[in-house]
Amino acid sequence: MSDHKATQEDMKKSRIPLEYRDYCASLLIPLNKCRGETFYLPWKCENERHAYEKCQYDDFKRRMKEQQEKADEE
Image (cartoon, rainbow, N blue to C red; front, top):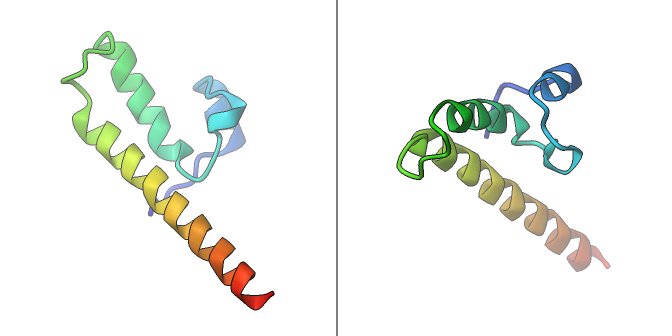
């Protein structure tokens, strides 16, 4: 997962909506910048989009694993 964490100030400056200010927000900032510079062309920013989506997926798997472990304890 990402080593760099976006600060609240970074996210505010980049106008990241509150619901997207999560573990992967540090990858969303450059993705949104790239999207703005390329007019959201779908074939642009593929590396940034893939990195963000992989982070989201890995975070989802981590949370589901934690939830399962918690349910197994009960």
